[in-house]
Each structure stands twice: as C-alpha cells, then as structure tokens.
Figure 1 (cartoon, helix red, strand yellow):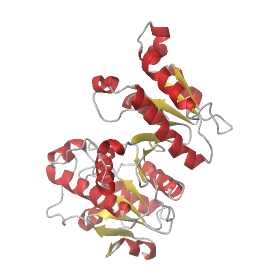
Figure 2 (cartoon, one colour):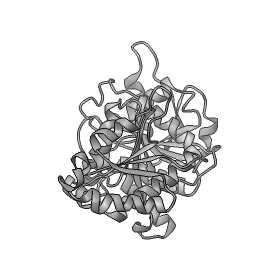
Figure 3 (tube, one colour):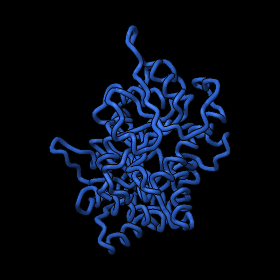
Figure 4 (cartoon, one colour):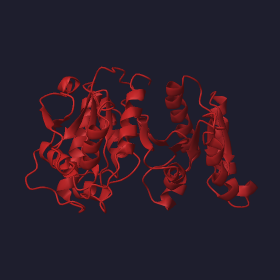
Length: 351
C-alpha cells in the first residue's frame, strides 16, 4: 500500500450487478453521506440509478445520480447524490437479479480492472470493492478466483514483475479481531499443502510490515497451528513442529514479534480485544481461509472489513458476498461497506 495522497477520491467498484453490490452502495450514499464524501462509484450509471430507485422509501424520491467525467470531479460532487463514473460499456437490458451470468461477471471484473489501474496510476487514493460472484467472473473469462488474485495480477503487470514477486495476503478485521491468511481461495486439500515454511514466513513478513505502518509499532502476532491442539507435540500432525515453528523462529530472528504455534480453537479468543481495547495479539496468522474468517465473521459481518495486504495500493471490501438470495429485495445491510470505506480512508497515507 503506497498511495499517500488523501486529497484524491476513493473509488467504490460496482460489484456484481446481479447481487447486492449496487443496493448497498446506494444505501451507503444515502445513510452515510459524510463518510462517503469524496467517494464515487466506478461502474454503470443505469445500474446505479435502478438501485437508487429500488431503495427509495415509498413516497420519497430516489437519491439523484451524478455522472462524472473524471475521478477528480468526485471531490466537488453535490451533497446528497451518488457520483458515478461510467467505466464499463453501458448495460442494455437490466441484469436479472440473483442469477449468475457472464455479462454480470464482465461488468464486475471490468470495474475492478479499471479501478486497479487508476489506483496504480495514482489517480485515486484507494479502492473499495463491492462483492463480485466468482462463478460469474469465471464465466466472463477472467482467470482469477476473486478480487485478491485479480488485483495482484494487475499490480504485477504495472510493476513489470513476476506474480511471485508481488505476494499478497488477505486480512479480515473488525473492532475486536484481525486475522491474516497464509492461503486464500483454494480447496482445503490444496490449502494444507500450501502450509510451507516459506509461505508462513512470507505471511508473517507481510503482516508485520503492513500492520506496523498502521499501528506505528511492531504488531504482536499470534500464529495458529494447523492441526487440533496445534498438533499436540506431533500426536495429531507434524506441520507445527516441522513447518510453522521454524517459520516463526526465522521471523523472530528478523525482529518480528511472532508467537506460537497456538491451538487454533483458542488463539482467536486470546487475540480478541477486551474491555480495554487490547487483546493478547494484534493479529492472528491463520493457516487457511475458513480457519481465519469464521471467527471474525461470527463476531458480526456488518462490521468486518477485508483488506488486501502487500499491494502497492489500498484496497478494502465488505466481508460478505453477493447475497443472490436477497438481491433486489431491499434487505441488504450496507454497514460492512461503510466500514470498508472508513478503513480505506484510515489506511491512505499510512503505508
């Protein structure tokens, strides 16, 4: 994360137009206009207008939508409107809500690509991504399982580096707990195989560097084991002894305040912020996706924020998906998106 110009606008990507992304964006501009001042939607004008109309209260007018010509115009957009920059080919017929389609995946993916390139050119301060649907993204021909990998590829291309030289990690955070994942979107079998000394050590380095910039000090990092009871001395698996512990030792030799491996069923409770706002650890390194995300999401998806660490740009997102089952019903909660905007604003200039 390197862009430090807080005067630049923040782009909120549309997300999958068949999901709740457009709706939560419209609700966020309606309900938290102060927090979204200086933000704009990188998306499709017609889709945002339909979302604004869909959430309008009975008898009340829909929130107006302002079409921007450049990102810079977002700073002076009138209060009480949704600023939109048309960054994809305009949609024809409305996308069917709650259905996977290649067209919806194309729109969602193209919005993210535009925003990533704008951030890498320092035209915007940060990206906040509304949820996309991985199946729709694949149907549209994007060879990435999600936002994180797509953004990593764009960053590597911009820097003219191999993908391996732009390592990234997912962090999920709320007011009580932060977790950073060794592996992201892969099967559980593949995730276990991805627990290597290099992978764990690289995760520790990325978390140390990124959170150190945010906290202004070295973060206290707790490391979860892979197996029940962190292997129980090798009785339930040897990964802790042969892989995780050596990675922690190497990190500590570099001055990283890492501790573990700890039993996965208790380390998250130890890290959870107490009444004084502090836990035993500032962050927990989790070995795979669900191990790290379930504890944070259990505390409340409305406050959780996904942050991509290791990119040369600031990117945050809500910690939930497209919610096709409620898309178009007006029931979607914009709280996590609003928290993601707040988090992005706080990160700009810190790293």
